[in-house]
Image 1 (cartoon, rainbow, N blue to C red):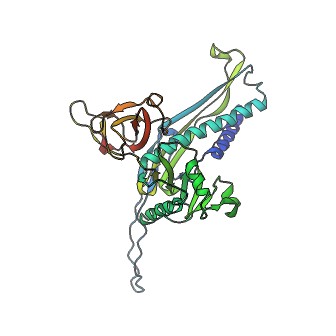
Image 2: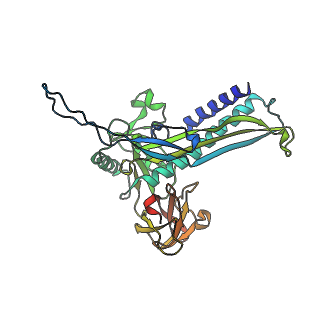
Image 3: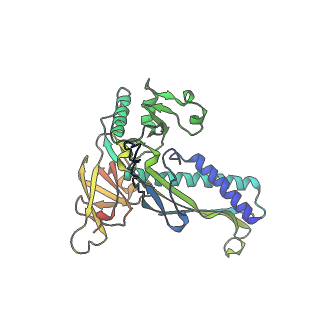
Length: 367
C-alpha cells in the first residue's frame, strides 16, 4: 500500500508541476531523448540534414542514400528535493487535506525552480538580439523582425514558434491591433496557458524580471528537457529521527537537465544597453580548468560581476550587495568551470545591475 501511495503522490505532484510550468514541455522544450535521467545523463538525437531527393530512373531504380543521426549528451545537472515537515502527525495519521495541501505546494515549488533553471539555460544558449526601445507603436514591427530572422535561419514555421514575453512587453502587445486573443484560437490553445498569437508566434506571459530582457522567441524542436523522480514523493515518518516526535514529512527528489540544441533557433530579445560577451581559454600559470570572459559590447561602465550556474537571475536595478556576485575584470578574471556551466555576467552602475548576459561554457572555452 505504501508503494501505491508513493506512486499516487508522485503522479499528483507531477500533474501540478506540469500545470504550473510556464516553460512547459511541448511548448518550449521537447522531451526527445534516450536513456534514464536518473542515471546522470541522456542522449539527444540530432539531425539537421534532410532525406535526399533524386530523380527516379524507371529502368535502374535509384541508388540508396545513407542518413545518419548523431547524438549529443544532456547531463542531468540538477537534483532538487522537498522535505516539508508536518508536525503533530505520524505518517499514518496525516489528514488528507493536509497531504493534499503539501503535495500541491510541492508541485508549485518544483515547477518554479525548474522554470528558473530552464530559463537560464535558454538565455545562455540563445542568440542575443538587441533592439531599439520597444513602444506600443513599434512592438509589432519588432516582433516581425524577429520572425524574419528566424525564418532566414530556417526555423520551422509550423505553428509551434513561441514568444515568452515579460509583463511590460505583454502590456504593449495587448495594445497592438495585430494581437489575436486566445479566445479566438480555440479551446486547445487556451488550456495551455497561451494568451494569444501575434506575427505567427504563440504568446505566453513570462513573469521574469531578468535585467533588460523583453522577450524570448523560439521553437520547441531546438531545446530539450529531461526530468524524472530520483526518489518519488512520499510521506515519511520522522519518529525514528531522534529529533522529531509525532511528526512526518513530505519528501521527494526530482532530477533534471536542459539543453539548447541550436542557438539561432532561440532568440533572447533585449532592450538597449544590454551586454554581449564571449569566453576564451584562460592563459598563464594555474589556468587549467578555467575560462576568461570578455565583455564586447553594450556596457554602461566598467564594473562587472559574475555568478556560475545562478539559482536566480539578476533583475534590473538589483543592488550589488543583493546580487552578491564575484567581481569580474573583463578579459582578465579566470573562472574555474566545467563544460555545460552557465556564466551570468552583470554590468553594475552606481552599485545597481543595469544589464546582464549569459554564456554557456563549452569544452573549447576551458584551458
